[in-house]
Amino acid sequence: MKLRIPIIAALIVVLLTACGGSGGGGGGLAAPEPPPPVADVPNLYALAPGNMPVGVAVPAGGASNSVLTSMPRQTIVDDHFSQITAENIMKPSFLHPGANSYFFDDADALIDYAVSQGKTVHGHVLIWHQQLPAWMQNFSGNATEWTNMMENHVDTIVRHFAVRNPGVVVSWDVVNEAFTDSDANMDGMTELRDTIWLQGIGPDYIADAFRTAKAADFDADLYYNDYNLAGIPEKLAAVLDMVDQFANDPNPVPIDGIGFQMHVSLDWPPIGDIASALAAAAATGLKVRISELDVTVNTDSAGNPGPLTQLTAAVAAQQQQRYHDIVSAYLDAVPAAQRGGIAVWGIADVDSWRRNNNPDEWPLLFDDQFQPKPALQGFADGLTGN
Ligand code: G3I
Image 1 (cartoon, protein in one colour):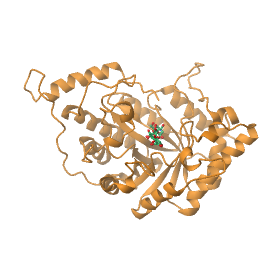
Image 2 (spheres, helix red, strand yellow):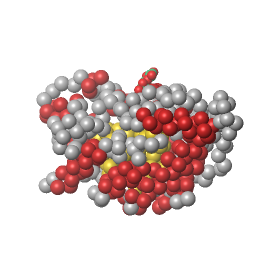
Image 3 (cartoon, rainbow, N blue to C red):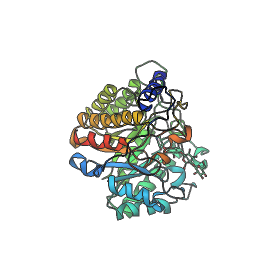
Image 4 (spheres, rainbow, N blue to C red):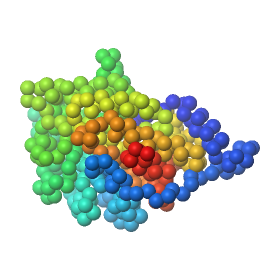
């Protein structure tokens, strides 16, 4: 996915790094100061108003950094989060590897861990255009066959977790990233993405996926999830239009919430845009989640690495403020009864998907040694209104 971050941001980072990181010694050649140690931060989830879920995406299954085999990661998850999301292992390529075969062992082990720690689980993801098994990508059939295939996929997966552990997978990303980023036909809304689902079934695949998921687990909250909803107004407009159509359908489509992924940078989207986008989503009456929060500090708008080779005190302070502002904006914009919660997309910087693109990136709340960053304090202060 392409994230829009103004080039100017990179320049600001350079300047702030030079100013804030030189220790006041002048000359600009001294090593920049690293972030200061962070004083004890109380458990995030205990700070959250009204038991709002505070979640985290976790590696599991065969991943070398699986939370199930890493004590430092488990300590962080247990201390700070009330909900987990599988970062990868509950996606179609993992759960549904063959047309007639499902693989639940790894996911069940993760669910068992969640249960043992008293955490709920947010299910991610049923219908997406990435991380699909090859058989699904190559599926051929008419619209009825495609619909049957999709419905079986959604029904089998949702039902598995609802039956094995009732009440643990409390919500699902039913459809993820169904809209493009650009308003090609200039009608104020971005278009449906050209996916196998759109090609095989047509635009009704989204409603059908929600109906199927609801029939499989009436109690789970069902979300539409996407990125850049706060940064591209036409994309949010497309999602809100879809929600409106769902509500006005003679047989209303059972959607419970809108998920904002919130993969952002220090300055894009501006906080005012984030606040107004969250408020617009809340005005639908649906639940609203921040589902995949992370904050890059050293990646430009084209996705290229910035100049930093280590996180500096000055940039860490900016990131702390950014986490604070986003959490605070969420609590201001979304009424308590509609808060699906806030989840960060990864436990520690060393785990972040942002490192795939830029090894010199530090987007999360804990550093490579699993120590709290100033960002954690920012998140906590956002929750408590400090
Ligand atoms: O499973 C293979 C493994 O067999 C192989 O050895 C290894 C070698 O690189 O790759 C493994 O696959 C990787 C997979 O994660 C599982 O670890 C892929 O290369 C890698 O591209 C994939 O990245 C994930 C990405 O989704 C895929 O698009 C990230 O970890 C994950 O954080 C990211 O999460 C997405 C959300 O689901 C949706 N929203 C955006 C978010 C960030 O892209």
